[in-house]
Image (cartoon, rainbow, N blue to C red; front, top):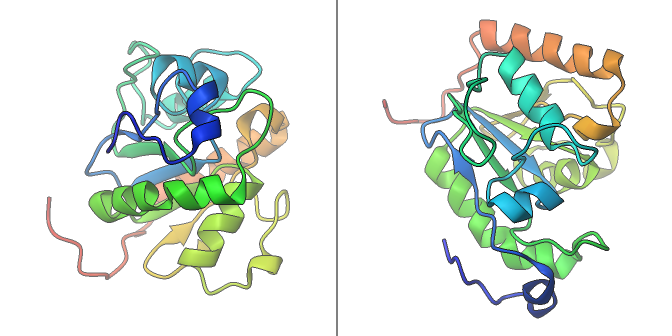
Length: 200
């Protein structure tokens, strides 16, 4: 993972740092957002932070409630268990969403992480992540994938199952509870696929 990546000249001018994935490399659950939030850009960890309006704290609190994140761990080094966090793009422009070209430029990083982690469950966080992962990892036509309709649903994929979520900062309390209930049920089920994964 290139810490000084220069593939997107415009983003090189606006980022604080390159934010590659972070977490348990043996994880069953891989969360994918669109781009680093402001706090993640500053700290260097996807979805890092406490509270705030950019959604970082919301996802962390959800992971803590699921027992997947140590509540005492610091924002810049969250103690994650069975979870890996990443984004479609590694760099942030504070004023705009990433372009299709920028997402394509980062695709090799994401693909490398997915191959390395070999998760069972992909969690697209937000509409853009759902559409991008849907194209590659499901047989569902991408036009049939959308939030909020697919929030907290289980979508069968190609060797993976997807459990999309609305951006945490945009979720109502009811939507957060619905997603947590779906994920608790999933964690209690036999969710592992038969795709030749190696024993860890």
